[in-house]
Image 1: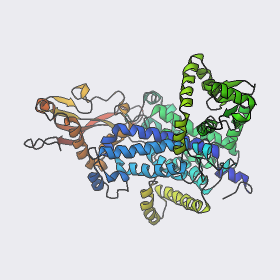
Image 2 (image 1 turned 90 degrees about the vertical axis):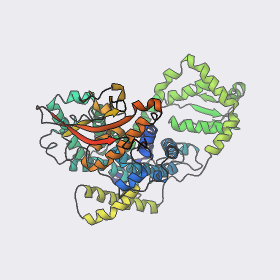
Image 3 (image 1 turned 120 degrees about the vertical axis):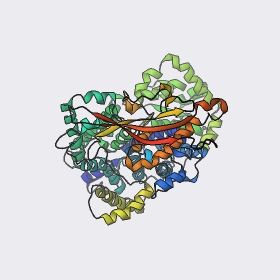
Image 4 (image 1 turned 30 degrees about the vertical axis):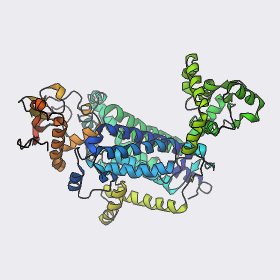
Length: 606
């Protein structure tokens, strides 16, 4: 779909600048990388056979369970290996190294991870999957990447990329808001404008600032209107050809401001971060051009980099710095071709950087002067140019220079120059076009539009590739039933203990001061919150078995048996949120009773 020449305004509406795609790639990859790193903290609990959902239980509890590579083995070492591979792939994707391969494998493995334990998923998980899906069809590695630095063939010169996939990605990002607004059909959103009040009353999510804001009901009404009308009208206006650049930029900032508010007021895990990453795709090319012009005025003459022609590793290092410091105007040339640079290189065994004032810099100072000219990292120059850092910086440079042969052999294997296919062919774009229609149709089904037969046909495909999206956060209205989980237990010596917080001693049934931060992370918060819901009641048995195993794992010896956990209860302190100005009520619900050793003659942990 080459519309740039024939329909420039339409191309600008549905196209994405290659520099914007690079920003999106790095932002999404960074969120994915951090999320996977955090996954190691609860690896055994969530994704192994000794955790809360063994594979056999997954198959039984989820009859329509999805395909997952994590089902191949339930041992910790296997899960850790797969998670480590995913983490490396996320870093490769963020840096743009073998970008498309890293993108495809990240998409497949992320879907596998989500399918392994549906009980801990949040909206941000599905959004990551959807964004990775559209990213596979786009040249996200064409700018500011390892691939762009080392490719044998240059990236596309034209900045604007227009394709069915670019349209699909833009529509995907806005679908989150538009269909969410449609699903927010309760009068708490419109006309009462009380939804934010109820959302900030949920102890499972609220943060201190959210509690403070909830003291001012008129303010929460204004915020409710801001969220709902922005989600409803913003996705329509952002594709408007009228005042395209200022309107799109303003709406992008408005959506970002909304998510910053979520971050400050509510514990929603990584969902706001993923959303902020997704919204970067609406950064127009004119923004990049304006920043480049401003930078050119501040630094009219770019620095020049000279390297040793006989050192392939040196050239690759310079090319990578040119990409990641965002110095496209900075020329790179062999020092042997310039007498001054050759003399300085030979005398000091160093690369050479000459700035616009014809001052030459070597070793560490040469790197800092490049930072000074970088539009992205220029702010670090006053810090890194400090005289105290020059000696250790030069020492690092000398170490690398002495071992450049070794580094050269390593980079020759890991970072070879290769031909890169920046853009996919017409056949792939036709597939993207089909999915533009199918994803739109799927989202229309989520708001109840017929025909249901097509929804049934799409479901197996969408579930298999994990783009079965449903944007129903706080829809049709925020929950009005909230609460907190208490797990009182009895040890073998007869003493009572708080199983979730043994350091606190006896169980405490009072509302925690900040329940949203009482669980460690969003996945435990989500899992324990769902245990209260009737549709997930069947999972309580396996959570009970998990608590028995983890508590008693080191207490089977005779001298420790008095501290074994024998029985406990899952008690949910249900709190119903009243209308503004009224007092909340609390009732105690016993969700589950569990015996860790139903047969003491065997003394086995279930």
